[in-house]
Length: 561
Image (cartoon, rainbow, N blue to C red):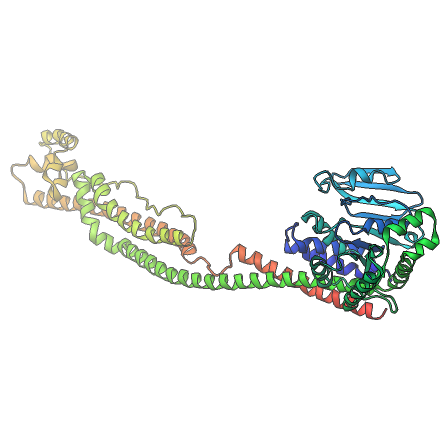
């Protein structure tokens, strides 16, 4: 089974976790996670060479390759991560950040794109640099990675740190003249050990520049340092080698095999070939650093899970408290609304309306002041009841953040029509009275009297007032007629109030149904933000469970290899 097959599901889960965590793309965890995913998907065996500047990294690689493939100088030069892979002919491919590519035969183009500028800065437009060489060791599926010197600039250190995570074997070059500096020890711990990178060998350079006695003493001290580092290498393979890089390169360029062997280069190359031959068959060498990065991702996911769960708990507590407050307010508003509706309904109850207003309406009709009475006394009383009802609905709308419905508006019937009885017949000789009756009605003289007596004027006023002597039967007829007129006004008032009561009850009932939906609105539903957070929490938990499961599957798979 290939690397990709074993790790693919794990890589998919890691990439999903990275996306869901919404990590800052400049953060170290994001860069490490992306690097480890790319690393797991690449089947090539990568050997990274790193060290502080001027330690001879590029010179060492050139010696292994047997030519001046990589740029070297007395000052820090490497300004990019240069991938050296197999190719039938030497050529260089530069990939730019804008997607453009530059491909040239040989490696001279490296001087333009892969070295530091005059301000000792890396180019900011280069995405990757690949050099292809016809070397048999590279043909076995190996790639060398020449990294910029460390301890020179922060950007270079960040690049090196990122790239180390993608190496199957790390070659750390040491300067015999400086032993192992504090910075090198810190990098060994922070950049390698803490990130699960344990396939590391040390190459000490410049040992040939020391006196023989000093060489022995320095090498022994470096041997102690190397042995204290628990490297995961094949059995009988040391993790410390001496290579005099510049003499080795010169010997290779001259074709002097004997001189090259005396530099320690042959032993170092043999160790590389042994490590690659063994480790290429062992998928587990990548797993330790995968676990290290996965642990950080899981820690970040768990921290986010805990934070969201805590936030949801606080929000739920507040929501419940808010619900309780709303429920109490709901009860108070419902109670007030029901009371105001009940009061209005009681006032609209027809027998009460008739008892309270029937005589007033009849009098206003008789006196011709109905419109004034309706607008002032009657409508004002109704408006007070309407406002008392609507007040509670507006409070509910404000409290529950609901759009207010149209206000309660009680409509009024048309002005009542009074149907008066026919007046009693007058004697034949009362022509003058009959002639004057229309005048009295037209001029409204009947309204001057007021009350039931005034009502008698309508249609028969002249008859009543022009009789100087009235027979008993005529007096009785007149009395009966006045009662009939009075009853007509009372009946008109009753009809008006009956129509008003029926119509008002219907309008109030419709408004009550609308208001009840607003007042009794459900307040238990969680806000959209909480619902979204719960879904996000479930997604995070699912991804975390899947990641743990895939790590266990890969671990079990590798243990059988």
